[in-house]
Image 1 (cartoon, one colour):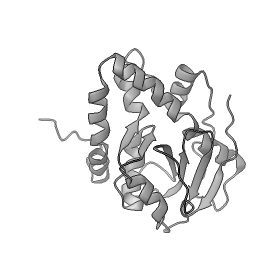
Image 2: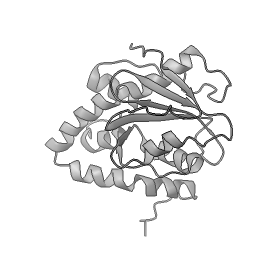
Image 3: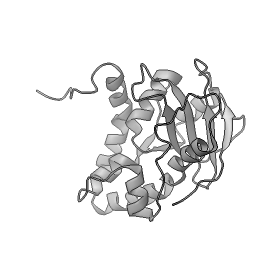
Length: 207
């Protein structure tokens, strides 16, 4: 099992002048799975270099100009696992449309059609031979002080996304599905908007 280093914890926003490079792995922790009810508590970010930055939010305090600038920077690729949820959360609480996006879950579903195992834990095991713990997944992320285990868990969720992307990119190219993957990624902000406006269980393309 891999253990992430203790990340850099910031309150309310990323520090001024922090450069995370041309691609950033991002995840979020919330109080639950409904953006209109369950507030954003934490955002995790990594440049893929083994270092992780965490931004902790207090209830109702979502100014975060540096983080918002990063999420909307067209020159920085944002790498997620299940971007659909994180993008919706950022729309709701930060008021920004995240782009450009890469989603490792979508990429996995497009090229690993021989399995239904597309969770982050599965991808770390199957592609990297790394076992990550999901024990803290359902803990209280709204706590005033996060525990060491919570911080390490949060950091681990973005630590391997660059390497997973690299492997999946190779398979997308091999199967000639890079273009369709990009089309799916480009659609994600619209899909997130639909989720937030009552269409999460409905396909608007249905008859």
